[in-house]
Image (cartoon, rainbow over all chains, first blue to last red; front, side, top):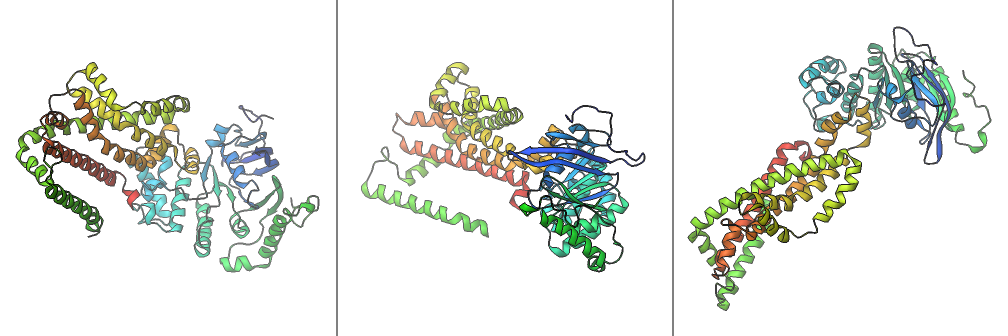
Length: 281
Length: 249
């Protein structure tokens, strides 16, 4: 089915007060003669947080491009709050790419305020508007620094502030902490979890780090052979200190199931076998 | 100072070459009209300073105005070529072709068309200088990081916002590379133009000194032309330091 046009049919019931409900149905995308995504279904309620895990080349980044409206599926449809056309999706998503992509000729604050300026706001006004969030994200004092003077963790915070200030209902995070060292990464994962409590958004988090997905998301989707090979509800308690959470028995069990689902995707003979996680609703 | 460390080797070499030149010419008794010794060139530089000074002012004007014209036209062309793929495909090969026409031949035609005044000089200098700026600017504009552009599109950025905030600032180092190369051509372009028809300038001085066999004066003019090119190069480098501070860091 063509995904173009202002179709009135909606696949999800968007919550009235919170925009950002997202649905993908039978999505297929062929790149370089290979079906990177094939018959992919995905539904995320508004303010839902879904982690996308899978091996390299499983189509994680392709999925984000399609959802963002930067790319169109060859078949199937993707819609956000009823908008199924690329322009409509583009208007509703903000992308945080793998690298921070900070512009070296802009100060940290001006990088964060980029979306406001793009929307036509004068620079002075954009800065004024970005400032409170900047401080709230733990970036106070870094406003005038060029990106080259920021640590890796600070750069990711600025990149996230920039994404948030686009004021879009859906955030697409493509391995946001992949380039950080383990300690900084853990720090930023906690930080992001806190920020998302204050600033709830619909989040698609692509990561190769299963633990990260389980800590930050309410559902984890294992992408393999072009579709959602397994879905796991994250229903374990995550309130305590991180070290206790990640070593708790339910968390470890969930982690095992996710890893098993990813591992299974590798074996060529395992196509029809039902793994421990693949039957999960 | 580190600046001094990078400057002394070429200066030393240049000094040695000039010294050797002086020794050989004087030892062999080569007459000045055949090949003047550095000391004769220096004498001409100071003795003819009224004449050379006036000629230098004329040529400096041509060089600077022509160079600015080149930068302006080159950037406009580069932006057009960047904005339209069709235009780039059609026009870029023609621009390359235009560079195969020797400027020495273009200059007299322009002198016939535009007269002996300032105009044809500016055009010749601009023609000599614009090409490296266009090529480097187009490359620079196209080299914007695709991931950053994708991200920008999700941050409310249209074509113009992406150009202003990502592509153009990112292209500045390339643009300045082209501008620095062009800076070394400008003085030569002005001399070509003056040879094709003029009544003043360093090229005119050279033209007049030739039949008079005043070779020392020709060399003096050449020394000034080199100094001009170097000064323009230094100015452009300085402008780059100011405009692209993030690149040096």
